[in-house]
Image (cartoon, rainbow, N blue to C red; front, top):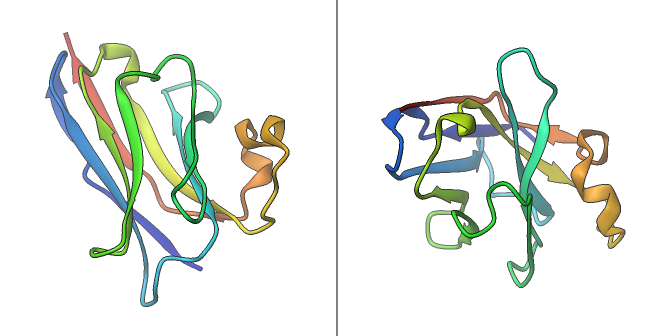
Length: 127
């Protein structure tokens, strides 16, 4: 499964941005999917996760209430709506898919839980 993330860019603090993740050449996999981000010089960190049916979502504390993860059946994408962005949201954002159907929520936060990754899209937020 090859994932492609798109929608990144340079915005001002307080703006909104929407990222999308699609599967290259096929339908989006029927797996739980997630967004991670990697700020410059730091490790990749969990942002949000959505179940394969879209009925449950999980968020990092730093983005809860500002970001919304969703699945768009019509466009066949997995999206991240980012509202009220802050300079500390600056990072490369990656989409990922977990093929294990795990319900161990503690594992959701670790990149090793995910087996398929997109190439990343840069988000830069200036103050």
